[in-house]
Amino acid sequence: MRLRKKPWVTEAIKEFSDFVIINAGSDSAGKWTEIFGREAPLYVELGTGKGRFITDLAAAHPNINFIGIEAQQDVLYYAAKKVRERELKNVRLLVFDINNILDIFAEGEVSRFYINFCDPWPKARHAKRRLTHQGFLEKYRKLLKKNGELFFKTDNRALFDFSLEQFSESGLKTNNVTYDLHSDNMSDNIMTEYEAKFSSIGVKINRCEVLFS
Image (cartoon, rainbow, N blue to C red; front, side, top):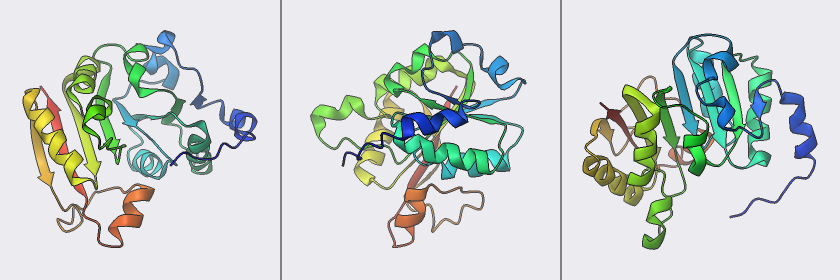
């Protein structure tokens, strides 16, 4: 479902310009240590939504630099509000199209990617748009450090099965694979807004960790 545009956001989001980047370009590739003003591992969430996950994660791990990428500015605004309210200095938020991710990071610059509840693109002809398709995996491979990781969660079993096949075909190792995350009682699991809502009514959450060796 397409969200109704909020014209006021274009102006309102400017108040977060110290950590929200609207037009990230190739000049940022290889410069994220400078942008954060410190040396630290770089973790990137692809599809940040309203920001519950990345703000909870960043608060729990102040020694990590976090970047949240979201294509919809109207949605990212709410993530920015959470970052400001919690005074998180280790988060940057980008309004950006993930298809162009090779433009904004240097090779080996990222330590970990997170993909949470991405669009499943259920029609076969749209398979290449799925963020776990081999085409995207090759992009992540270029950007991740040796032994970098991808953490993936979805409630869509068909997408999860497809993703596991793609990981295998790309020669990637998967760890901690579960088809019912909340029944497994993973103690350090941090939920997204979507996950909290749907897991509370019994929807099973699939999760795995992928190693890029």
